Length: 61
Image (cartoon, rainbow, N blue to C red; front, side, top):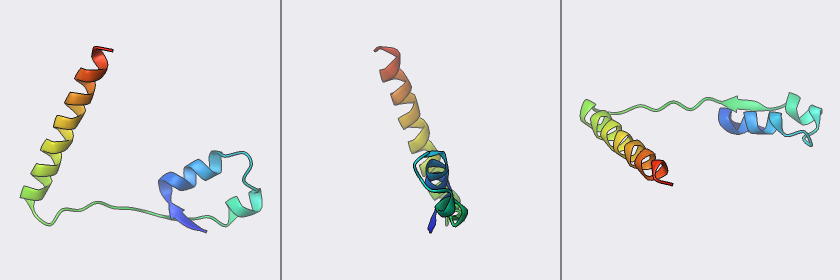
């Protein structure tokens, strides 16, 4: 069975999955790349803004 690294870890941690299946898991690594520096900058700005907003909202709860 092929799955992402993240989901593979979830499957490995799940106790009800048979060991035979766990032995046959194939992890597909995922890499992120940007075509231009501008795309990277936009992504980083958007991510940092979202993280700051999330932090501010959760501080007040």
